[in-house]
Image (cartoon, rainbow, N blue to C red; front, side, top):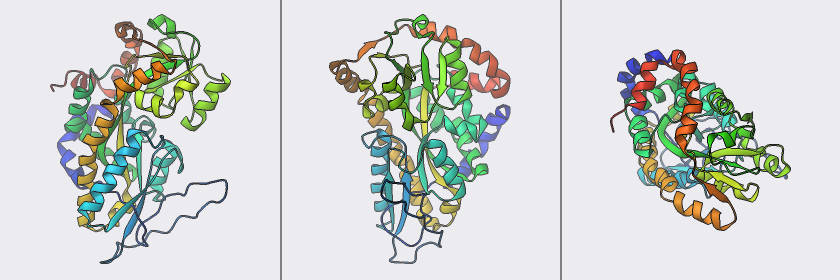
Length: 356
């Protein structure tokens, strides 16, 4: 499938009409699968036609991170922009901390039309659209500018276009950041130090193969279960961007952080196709614009705070190391060989060598 990716990006312009979001109270939009609480579980509303003049459409937006994470901050900015662009006709209710399910569950709910909006890392999307897995190759992107140029350009937009086939509208690439490793056993000063650690990872075969190449024991686990598993010693460590490690206080259950930047983790703001197509075209346009405009803000929330967050975690007792990443690149090189045929070597090269 990936061998056709670069040929398909010429049609990427077709997706520019595909993004949406909102949040207040209404009788007009499909509502998401509700968050179950200890007290009660609210039943989702049925899909209805676009709101008439004077009515307010409310859409539910879900993400799996803490409310201090850039996902939540980005959705708040998105909601503000949508409110402005629709003169208050479309509102967004934001549900964080996996209240409406984890990322994979959110993707499935978008497909069914029982969730309106979700922000998800692209890792789980590879289980639905295989082509997204190319983004999970280790050390594919050299820095943030490189990643943004690829994802906001023809290659990234070609990937977004493929979401239409699974009943999802891709809005814009946001981000989670470059992923780092934490553990409770010992500092990681070199690639050899990673060997033998039982590391929680996403349910993503490329990630699992990459960590196995380091001699680690990659263990897929829902994010909602990770903190307890770290505390109880079920797993030795986990890997995530700084924003996730900081906002979820992973440092309270871990002793060591290694800045490896082994994988850049993009994310997407996603919309249920059935919900999106039920909206007035003017609202669709407003939502697409808002998704793209909010991307810069969400990304800045990730990148601008990383150094300060690392220093704060150091002050709280987390030991931070900066191992030579060339050792990690060399150890993970076999992953590229394994997936060259599947993704197409020309597609991998196009990303690695992308001019920015």
